[in-house]
Image (cartoon, rainbow, N blue to C red; front, side, top):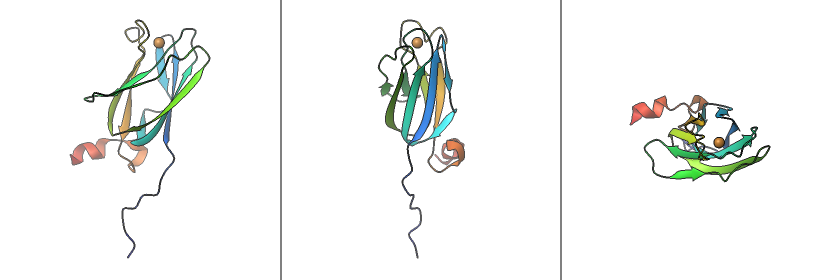
Amino acid sequence: MIAAAHHPPRPPARVQVVAEEFRYSLSRPSVEAGKVIVEVVNRGQDTHDLDLRRIGGSRTYRFPAVRPGRVVDREWTLRPGRYLLWCAVADHRERGMHAVLVVGTPGSPHGHPSSFARRR
Ligand SMILES: [Cu+2]
């Protein structure tokens, strides 16, 4: 018998976040948990950044400031949950630069977290 539940390694999930005054546009609403590459594209005229924290979590994943026209990416290992994204520059968060990214259980379709939410 072949050992079950062996998952071959997968390339990191990716999500692109376009930043402009004053909002984020995400390329997808959810990604699989595990290695995730987050790419920030600043299409605005001001400098923006991006902070990321799992709701209920304590670690903040931070981008450096991204100047207009620049693209910066970071790779992190993210566990399942809902992550709040916000711009920490001046009052940008209050002006609308925030979003939610769902990080779902690996292997579930579209990285949707509903299956893991029920199992716990
Ligand atoms: Cu900003």
